[in-house]
Length: 97
Image (cartoon, helix red, strand yellow):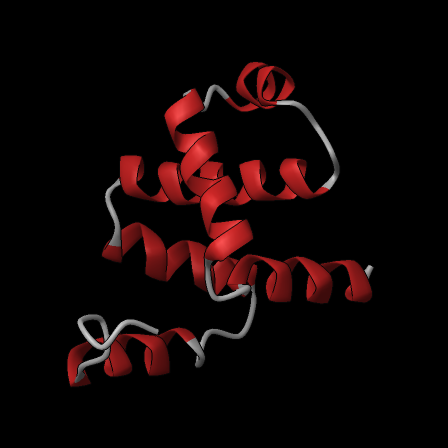
């Protein structure tokens, strides 16, 4: 993770997130912490990552999610050159199904 991102405040946020017990608690917490648009943007990027890993085209992803090609490209860059965070979570979700 970027040294610019690592700080005590972000650590505290992540520690708080790790205490959430279920989806309902996530809704309660994230509705307070994020604006509706922020939460929808994060969830959209996750769906884009999922669809990219499933082999969908940019056009299919844009049509299904409403994401711009710039957003799809940004997520694709993270998938290819990032810290593998998307892949880690996508694999864990797949394993839990």
